[in-house]
Length: 211
Image (tube, rainbow, N blue to C red; front, top):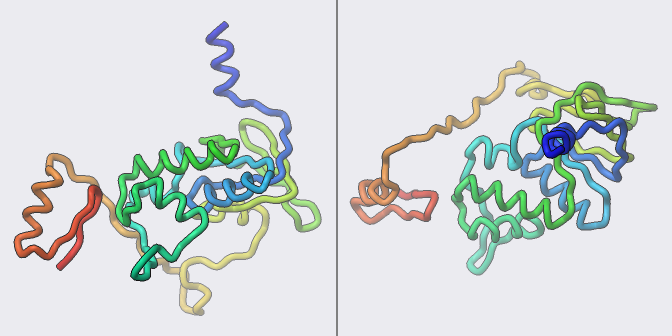
């Protein structure tokens, strides 16, 4: 019996489900869109084709934020400030802690989240997106948000687009993303001390910077 129940829940095979809002892509912008809508009382479904939430911040290890601050406080507000508080109010952060923060925000807002859900087909009527078909079932909603980094949902729905720098009239070439890599066997404290030979480097638990 336990095996049967487990298989049922993991399968999440729904013939049809209706929501007030469906967000596609559990990127930072997707998480905050879903949380904001759920906080306003909407029934929200967040679909993610990958295995986790947080997008480039957690899956791509882009673990440093661009902050706008005055002499007293952070200028950004809203849900970003909530996320910033949860990661310890640091510009550079641990990606595991960041993903945990996103999950906590989603859970507290009551957002339904489904991972590893690719799109099979989208339904469009009179120029409006009405439903998504996935291997796990079909979902409908009056409103959809495409928060995927590659705009998969908008593309499948027929939205026009340009690629790379085509809008400049040049060509479709794109700028390469930042190369992020992992190094093992380097104690963080020793790295900081080696860099800080003139006392010009600052650090946190997850970042170091300076001249």
